[in-house]
Each structure stands twice: as C-alpha cells, then as structure tokens.
Length: 315
Image (cartoon, rainbow, N blue to C red; front, side):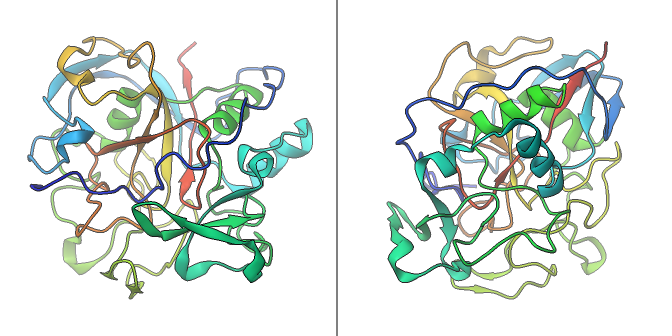
C-alpha cells in the first residue's frame, strides 16, 4: 500500500493514566490446555507484496527459524478470562483507569459517561466504565458472549493471565508462523484472495468506514472465537476479530537486524506488538488483516478490539 501511514484501528496510546500494572499473580503450573503443538522450522517473515505501511516495518522479508512451541487454538474468551479474575481478583488496567475506548456505533452508556473522542481517530469514544465485563459501556455486559474473545485487555493484563494459566504470550515471530498455517509467503492465512468463492474468511469491516458496516461477514463487532475456518495448523481467527498482543517490544526497523533463530524483539521500547487486525479493519485505512501486518500500542492501552492468545515452550 502506498501513501502516508494510516491511523490504526486501535486508538494510539489510550488510556495512559495507569501508573503501574497490577501485581502479577502467582505463576500457574505449565499448561498446554487448548493449544496446538507446532514443529517449528524456517519461514519467510514479512510482507512479500509491498502492501504494508512503511512506519509498521513489515520489511525486509527475512528467514526465521523457530524451535517447536505450543500456541492457543483461539483467542482467550470471556469465559476463560472470567475464571482468571475469579481466581486471582485481578483488576484490569481499563478498570483501574476508569474508562476505555469503544467504537462510536456501539456505545451503550449514559451521556455522562462519554468522555470524548480519540485524537486522530474520532470513531473511538473514551467511555467511562467500559471494560472487559462491560465492553460497550455501563449499560452493556457479556451475557451470551462467553465464547467471544475478551476485549479491553492491556498487554499487562494479558501477561498476568498468561502467567496464571501456566503459559506466556507468543513472540511476534511465533505468532506470524502460526498464523500462516503452513502457507509461507501468502497474503492471508488461507491464500492470496480475500474472499475465495465469494465467502468471507474473517471478521473485518465491510461497507464505508467508519459509518456504514454492512456486516456481510455476519458480525458488527466480535465474533465467537471459533468462527469461519481454522488455518492449516488448526488456529482460528488469526485475521480480523480482535488484535492480539505479542510479547515483543515494537520497533519499525527491527526486521533489518532481527536474530535469525527464535527472535524475541528489541530489548526495550515504548509500545508492544499487536498482530492480526480486528473487526474494524478495512482496506481504505487499515489493511492490517494480512498475515504479515503488524501494529503496536503502549502496554497499558485498552480498547474494544484488543485481545490475545497464549503460547508455551515445548518442554
């Protein structure tokens, strides 16, 4: 894709008022529940089509070799996150901050809870009382959405969950290898065509963003975590639905000097890597549902399209 760097479909760096993450829970016993084992091996990481935003740093395409690892079949659900909160008393960054970002078409909150629009992305509304249990605001809840991905989780929250579950967050290289499902060098997890046989294979925006979503794929916001078809490795929804946190710090020039074996990202940074795109991605402004696409935001940030899945070592 040509042209200037487009705003991502996550509000940049909001909220930022959380001064420190919640204490980490005790580490759980290692678990591969709900995970698939991947054999590792070498693949070509990065954008081979020249479609990425320059500031995202999707090039150069470079060979990466990974040792075997495990990764969740799906994003973590509301039901699983609720079990974590019940067991640990964890309070998310969004709850501690008191507000989080909600897409303007689905806000369900009193007028007094509308705190303003995100700079540069007015379709995001900062809503008091929005968090994982009340994803659209104080009048909403997750009833009937137990098998949808949990949202409004920060990198800090995702890391805390992973520790409790006896898992960890995937590295960015592990995430891309797993998301490709064995289709090295392809545009999407299922091939190069967005809608093969005229069928949607992921939950993204259809229509004119940000005001009209025809929901041809069946969903205005999140879809159940086992929607559409799994990829060749048995992973569900690695394109669209919700952005997924990775372990790595983000740097747009990291690929130029990435380690060739089991890279884990820069040693330091201010933002963490996000992968996969979300239900708000559209090629008119955020073509990041491609398997090579990357984005980032600060580790305390939360919004109604930020989720995660976990990984594990092969030991």
